[in-house]
Length: 158
Image (cartoon, rainbow, N blue to C red; front, side, top):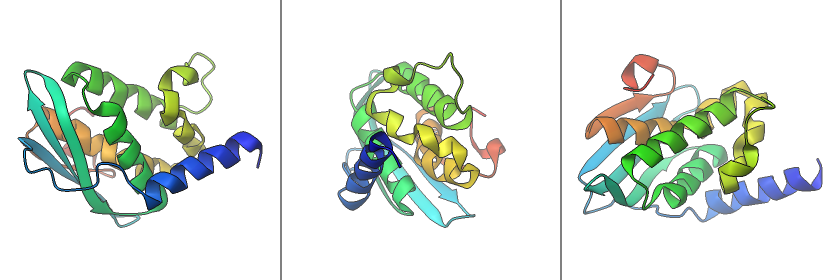
């Protein structure tokens, strides 16, 4: 591994060991549950949305290091964004982890989320990294929804 890969691995492990915003959100007015049956990852995303702004976000769940770290970083990045900005961030994150090394993709614009850019080399891990994001997307579009990484029909934006 090179130094950048080592750094990325450390960031993911830090978020897995010390997840940010890991709690039930008592003020949530939207939530969704997500599951990755292949890996056993499960997540619930809670949103407190007012006037189109995600005022607060949290998650609960169990899963592998990538799933938990992705959920943790997602909550940190999404908090305070408008629903439109959060939806755009979801789309860009999903593109980054599924499209591989598209030379037109602006990886620097992803900021700290770029640590997940190498996940696309491991197709099974793409579902781990995207679970919380699909669950967020479901919560934004259907206040009490369910998302699953293996069934696009359950995801309102797929």
